[in-house]
Length: 320
Image (cartoon, rainbow, N blue to C red; front, side):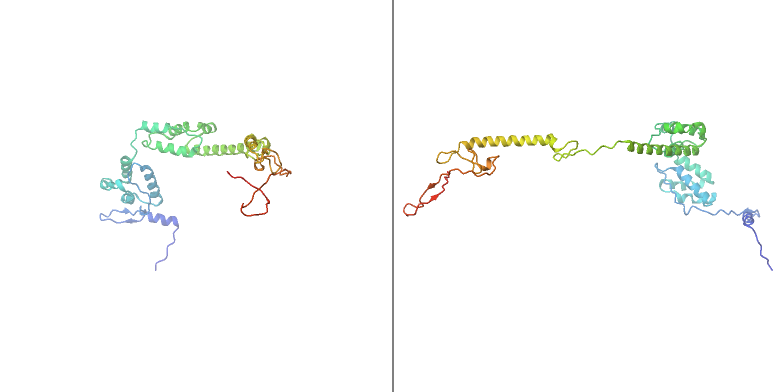
């Protein structure tokens, strides 16, 4: 009768690692427990000039470690991740037998071809301005330095290059001799930027509070501008002067023309409203509609000469 065997998790993992399979020559081969693959990996590389081969390699390396993909399975599944021009790698895969060799071939084939002096010119052509966050600037600078060959520059030399390009407010608060790596530089730079933003906000609020409030200023009812009223408005005064000049000019011309007009009896023309001579009521600006008794001449006329009609007084208007 078989009795059950109880093992801990550590003992079971050790047993799996020690499982061996017999081969034809009776040599034992250890059975690999890493059976992951790139079937669900979403990273792709097409070999164009806009594609970053190093970013692609970093992505598949991380996926390989997290999904427990062995080197043999990764080498077999790598062609699934290549598109476009990069898919021609399948034609030379027979000459590659290790995962490291495949990665090196991708770097040499599709990696950056800039010489070191051009990389340095691209790095030093611009410095950090006041609007660019430090983490963004450092990330862009390190991506430029990544175009150099591996282990060409140490981290301290790269740190010196990038530190010299930072904004003055960062270099004043973060001494170089207290920074060991890029992680510490990013951490200290974020603290400085946060403090700087707080100071800017406080200064803006203080400036607004200290700004004296202006009293309510009068507004003109004619031109709608402030600082004066309608009685002091130059535009209103100019308009009134033009109106008075036009009235005086019109009154003078009306008076001159009206004075020459007389009635049929030879008397001068007078206003029906106020009785002033030389005006008519519609053209006299100062008429107060005061009716003044004045003599009016009327002519008598017979409607027909062959009818004998009793004569009566009728007003007559002559039309020319």
